[in-house]
Image: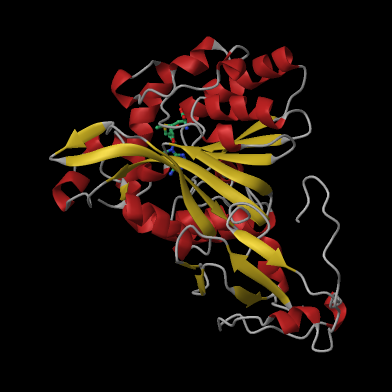
Length: 383
Ligand SMILES: C[S@@+](CC[C@H](N)C(=O)[O-])C[C@H]1O[C@@H](n2cnc3c(N)ncnc32)[C@H](O)[C@@H]1O
């Protein structure tokens, strides 16, 4: 089905969903009740989510919610990140935005601070501000082929000069039950856009409906199933691979619904929440650092193709050394720093394409000949 057709079917269904609760679009989710008390009832009723990515946010973060609907996840996130944080919701459906924009000041009044902003756009084209484009086209409507070309140029200028969401603008991208609604051909672009708007070191936490088998062609032609989060569902593996293909690393499943939400023609559809990190760009420097994979598996293969055996010391660049001391890696690796630090400004380049062991002599220095006595045996220390 062409992307534009998917878009209009989805928009029509969620236009209705904004005006009244549509029961079959709901997938029961239990949110943290502490955050629900301040949220207006109308928003809570029109909940079309399938997971809760807001559970994985931290105070002070800048968050982007893709397909924010009537605003529930934005309004929960607003409380988790607190007054020092910021939340941006993006949705394409006017009626959804109307409910969210009308309720944002009510929430702000109850919380005593305003940190939510709702923007209109397509999540697969996060640079284009549709309110801005509409305002400009209203002044110069498209009535000819020449006008259409001018409008396309204008849209490109807006993407470049006044982006809806700028490169690296946010710490975390969240989404709740929306990615499956984007047409198949546009999904790679969608994941690239998520990557673009994240700052280096940022992460995506996405809840979505996924399938245990590929959705066959005939199910992909059914408009009802498209807007009902079935036709466009990625497989569980396809979902995780889409992050990898966009350049993310450290991709992991945070939650996977045990019982399927729906089964159609024997294919199970369930909610999955995945997390993926952005921080692999930049030069690699040799500072004589190493990491040891702790186990429990005999070996692991990282996102750069390094195969590491449990207990061995591997030479890593400075970037990987720092990366493996953070989430999601830190519980799996022991960092081994050199005895004599190598200053960053004199560090030579490191070839990250190879996997190499690091001999302990490299970390300690070839001339290291120290001999020490055993430490005094005190309670709690080694004997
Ligand atoms: C299933 S609802 C989820 C709403 C909300 N995340 C929640 O948890 O209740 C899907 C929402 O995504 C929006 N949406 C679907 N496709 C979109 C797209 N390509 N760009 C922007 N918004 C989209 C719809 O307008 C709708 O508000």
